[in-house]
Length: 95
Image 1: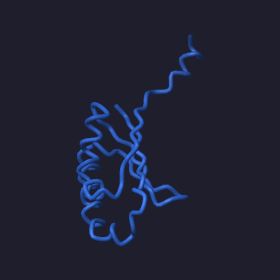
Image 2 (image 1 turned 30 degrees about the horizontal axis):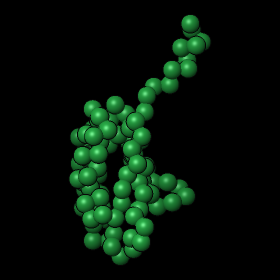
Image 3 (image 1 turned 90 degrees about the vertical axis):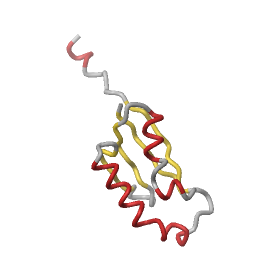
Image 4 (image 1 turned 120 degrees about the vertical axis):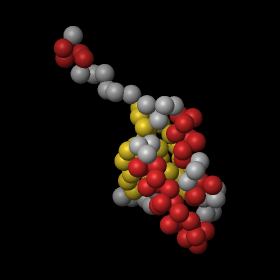
């Protein structure tokens, strides 16, 4: 299953609170990328929030992976998970 994960900072989280976790966060994101759970990783151009394209067996599995991120563990960010499915519209062209 392909999923879109949209990061949201917790209200009131200060920049200083993030600093001790930045290196560990990048390392864990890299590990999840190397394992194939995170397929693509971006930052929004208009906000300092990450957008992940993930591959997992279920929404629950994706949530468990995201829960291993240091910034999630520290309560500084959360993720909105959106399960995706293939676009079926092309089938109308050939039906």
